[in-house]
Amino acid sequence: MAGRIGLVPLDEAERLAAEIGIPAATGRLNIFRMMARDPTVARAVFTQHNALRHGGKLPDRLRELVIMRIAWLERSEYEWAQHWAIASRLGMTPEDVLAVRNWRISSLLSDADRAVLAAVDDTLGGGMITDPVWESCVAVLGSSDAMIELVVAIGHWSALARLFRSFAVPLESGMTSWPPDGIAP
Image (cartoon, rainbow, N blue to C red; front, side, top):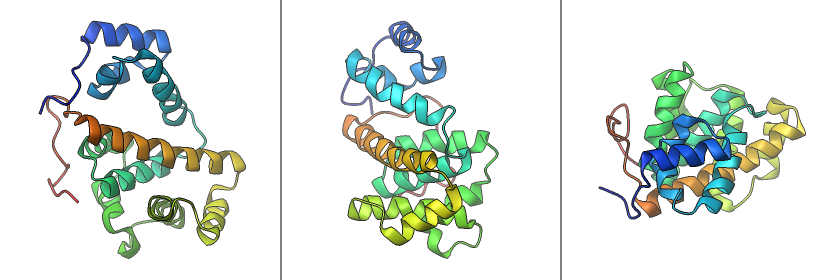
């Protein structure tokens, strides 16, 4: 599928990415190339994205588990495929990442993993993190900065998952649908 909105030419997307100050690799992604049709909105979305993705307070593993759970619950093929690759580059095992599908029964996940996954489920299911889940997240994350980032990250990647689906963003060439096993929610 070509998507609902055409991609800007690669050279234009790369120029805009450099102007915004986001990594060149992000500027080459199909989602950025679609959103670059509205540079003001692209700048806002990807400035936040860059802050959360590069150098944030939330540990990489927890951030990627949050994103993969969101991708699964929101049925976002593009987000799942993109972040499967990122989680793999971070050294996360396929089994750990796949555990987000049914995390409550997985024996592979830590208390910290379970806390942030519960926060995702609370937020997507009820609009906010409940008090008991909040307390478990504070216990494992330990700082207000990390809690702020967790809440913003859940909102950010939930919004992106919905953008990906609404725009029908096509996977980049060579990417696999619903890696590693092709099973979709």
